Structure formats: structure tokens, C-alpha cells
Image (tube, rainbow, N blue to C red; front, top):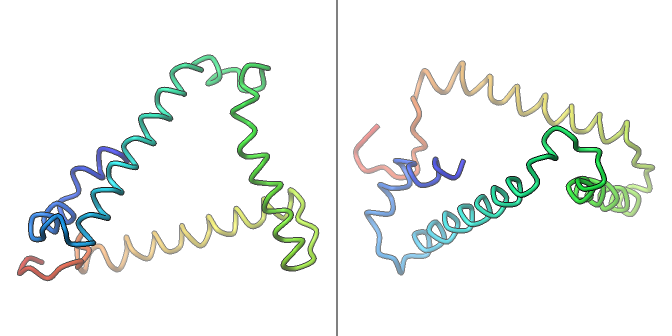
Length: 130
């Protein structure tokens, strides 16, 4: 993903057209560098804990399981606050699979209908190329 952010032709063409002081250009460059540094940070952390790839349930790898547990606890409290609902793991599984289904349907629709018709063009800018 990090490499594709730097070699994305549509974005590179846009950046060539505007000055650095233009807000879109500045935001895009900050976004690129942020994604790059975050990816490098995760890569370094992953390589330091290489044994966790095969033994995720060991005591050394417990730190890798905490973010998902904390996210679950946070979403559980939000659901309880907003809807008064009991957010259990089966509900979380259903919502995750339902979201995956919606995403997959959208991707299939794009591949079957939009991609053959328009190609891989975002139409972010109309600079004479289609």
C-alpha cells in the first residue's frame, strides 16, 4: 500500500499541476509521508516480533492482541450508549461479515460495470486525458 501511494499516476499528475501552497497538494504530501512512516513503524515492530507470526497466543505476543480487545470494548460501550444494545461477539461477527458482503458487492459492481466502461480513471481532474 505504501508503494502504491507514491506511484499513483493520477495523484502524481495532480501534484505536478499545483504549487506546494495549494491545500490539496499539501494535504496529499502530508498523507503520503504519514502512511509511509506508519507503515515503516509497523514493519519494524513486526520484524522485532517475528516469532509472533506463528505463535500468536504466546505470552510475548500478548501486546499484539490488546488493540483488537480494546477496540471491541470501545465499540461495545458505544453500542450500549447509542442503542442500549448488548454488543456481543456474535453481533460483532455479524456486523463484520455484513460489512464485508456490502464491500464485496460494491467491488463486484465496480469490476463488472464501471471498470470496463471507464477504465481505471478516478476523474479527479479533467486535464484532457480519459
